[in-house]
Amino acid sequence: MFRLAPLLPISLTLCCLGFVLALLSVGGELVHHPTHAEWRQAIVKAAAAHIPIDATSCGMVELREDASNAQACVKAAMAKGSPFWVLSQARGEDSIVWSLLLGDGTANYRAVEFDSYGWEKQGHPSFTSREVSCSSPLFGQAQAAVWCNRR
Image (cartoon, rainbow, N blue to C red; front, side, top):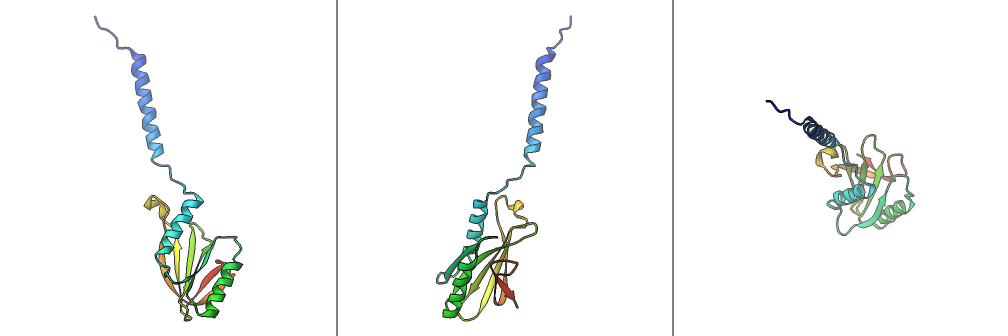
């Protein structure tokens, strides 16, 4: 005669396999949300490639931080004719935005603007950048603590 297969163990095995496959498909859609420290490390690394060794560091100013020390440092470097740099975070709409303002000590200024838009495709926090020519620094504007007055 025919013997029936034990249905309970087979159905439990199939149920477990389905559950594992469902978890794997949902897990593939999860996105890593970098911490503040990871974003800070990413911008420091991105900006470092653009900073001259002999320039005075006027520091980093994040959103809503007191920018008076950084602004005073930039003004003092400009008055002395010394090269300087300052990294200021700006308000982004859908990404993290920073501006690295550089002065060469001879009234020539440039900025490197960093934007995190599209970082998810990189797998870790990252920025794209573009260089901008400046006529002078702007202080205390709505954009950031120290910003580029574009030419």
